[in-house]
Structures are given as structure tokens and as C-alpha cells.
Length: 147
Image (tube, rainbow, N blue to C red):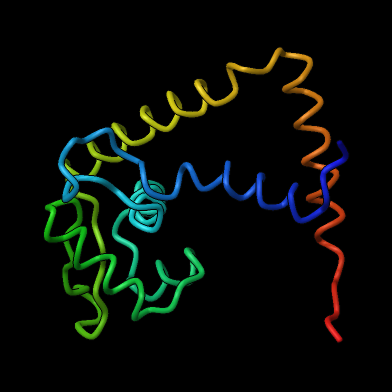
């Protein structure tokens, strides 16, 4: 059976979505990190003390969307927002120690998920899959104009 392009795309996105909701192995739903929260913590680990606007730009999200994510992360004690000492209109975002620990736990858990996901493949199959996905990625960067 030769799969259709739609079947391939659906399988690819379905497999990729495994990361969207489970970024922390906690039993409690309120302790789990969602993909947007995880991306935010990961960015802060690289650029701690960044302004909210610069963080929104780095994550390529609307400032209002980021504000919601940051509020949830602050409620969990993972980030804190402080007024800039040089510009009181600007809020700076910092990762807390609890946030660093949650990020590390999430990274470790994701590595475990990825290792499990790809354990079904041999090293040669992993290399082949990587080459094929890179080929699809390069082709997808071409401009597409819809009628």
C-alpha cells in the first residue's frame, strides 16, 4: 500500500504532537507543562531577565498570548516578572529556581519519550528517516501560493 500525501502528513503531525501536552511526568494535571509553557521556560533559560516584549518576539507569539502563559507559569512559581530598573514601563521575566528544576525535569522526560519513540527503529532507519525529513523540510521552505 502506498500512503497518500494526506495520510503521511497526518501520521507525521500525530507523531509530533506527542510533545505538545506532556512535557512533565507529573500525575497532577496542574503541574504539567504544555508546549507553549515549555518553550517559554527554555527561552528564559537562555535569556533570563528578558523583557516581555523581547520574549514574545523570540517565541514568535502575540504579547497578549505570552501574558497568559506567563501568568500561569507565575502561579506555579516557575517565573517571576519584575519592573525594569531602567524603564519602569517594561516588565522583565526571570526563571525561578523552581522553574529551572521544572524545565530540567521536562527536558529529561522528553528525552525519555523520544528515546522510547525511536527505539523501534534501527540506527540505519533513524538515519534514513532523518534524511527523508530533511528533504521534506527543504522542499517545504519553497514559497507556496494558494489560488
